Image (cartoon, rainbow, N blue to C red):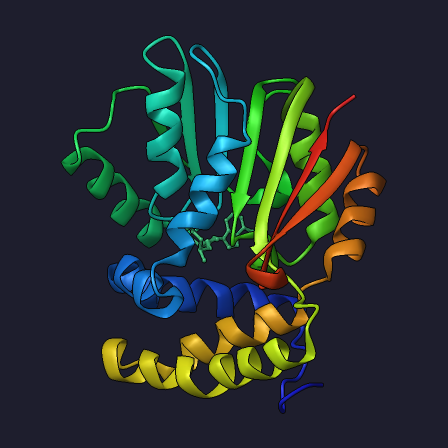
Length: 243
Ligand code: SAM
């Protein structure tokens, strides 16, 4: 345990994740900007730049939430391509769909309620799969990685953008203080929901570090797995290819 956090039973984790995202859906974008000081936009832009997305491609944005990546992909793949915004949580999916429609995003987006652990798509469907700040919420991460491997086309790329482990002890201290003190207080002030934001901080703490996740991707059948730290390892972008 860390900071009083107890590993919770599986069913309870699923329920807790659902409660958190039903609760934060309406204020999710605002909180994202506030809590990251807007840096999440940079992390996402770097991800898109390295995706190699081109006109005509099929992209899956799993745990896509309010659709930041989906929106960018939608422009890149154009009318001959397709982006599937998939999320397990219908509240997040609804906020995402409304936002994208209001923004006039192209008609090349599909919305699907799905669990990353058992994706409802045929084998070898997608050129690119992204999961941004989503994998840490998934209960069976190995099953999710295998499922993503299955629905990728051979040669297709998985990109996992997720909070990770900082390498510098001072930065780690500052970051812990921020996550466990400031962040829940912001959650309370702005969304009247300290509990959800405490969960988010705890889930970041529990998530596998860079090397562990890289090994998990290898084990799920990806090749050429590597990662790139951003912001001193606060976030890491892992990529792997389906052989
Ligand atoms: N990708 C978006 C972004 O970067 O802004 C949203 C990230 S949000 C922190 C995490 C999302 O993961 C939530 O929308 C949640 O509903 C979704 N999620 C959690 N568990 C999931 C699962 N097992 N399968 C699919 N989505 C899941």
